[in-house]
Image 1 (cartoon, rainbow, N blue to C red):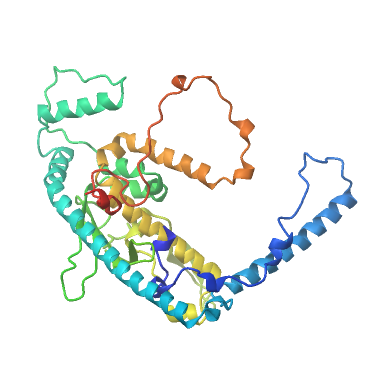
Image 2: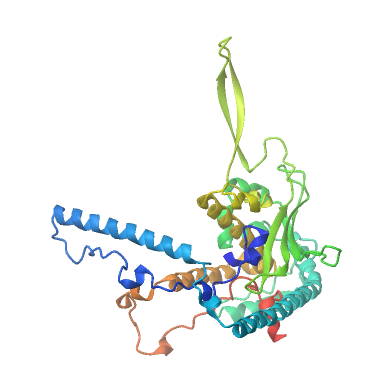
Length: 425
């Protein structure tokens, strides 16, 4: 994910490490300086204070050495080891020829992604009438048909053997579904963390979320998409629509996917004292000359879902090059950009196409399973305690079938066309 969210537009020119980055000599870490060998508490609980102090001092020394090693290794990246320079001119010509072939491959990959984007647009147009029908049922503008209800029950029975069909003696009406989108958003793992109790009052007025693709046929085409949040009249803000636009760079990145360029959000016209992105406090101020006091109302930023419409701004290239932003701040900005991009992609690929699954909570099963899989992927092989996993049955037949989670990233929802699946079209 992080590879698709560059801090600046120039990062797409960064090349992967090549043999020229390989140092001629072995790094000290390869000569035996590994992780600090601090004994586990279970190995020796009888150490006296002197031994503990000695071990702690040794560990600190080794950690300092490791820091020096990592610093040296980091400094070697990008530097020439002399290997490429030592090659005969004929071999160097062949290397340049390979780069020329790679240029053509990149052009084809860019064309492929463009065509996949056009395919996404095509299928969005085919789905639009279904989205409109969904909105009509949610808002209570129309009565669900018996055919739609029957198809939905078949879907439920197929998914859950214990599902109980609804009684047939009640005729469907245009009743609508209250707080549909608020519930759906809260059932998304990432979005749920952004929605505060204060936000809920405003999000109860959210009546639809739509998606549009940017028109990239102009003189300066930019691929991307727009998320449109439709609200009914409310006491919080004047806007009927809140939009968030994601713009990709024109060329695909090193990974072969469209690269996030920037995001543009709607300016929310808050009504008086209703700005959910700020908290207000009353403070007393005393005049030094007259000794009179007055009450001053001050606002400070606070967490809110509606900060989503004020996206983080990548720092300027020259600010990074001149060292005006330290590494810690740069990392924080990058994390915010990644989160902002991921939320936009999840709304586009998951929540909008499968809104009813997020409303019912079914999609949450997949989200939680994805999180569990991430935990296993992040474990180091030598740190897994095999004894912690016990077989409760000698037969695989006794183990219930586990539902596969949908693929992560782009294409988390089957209803949308995933560029990564275009190879099978």
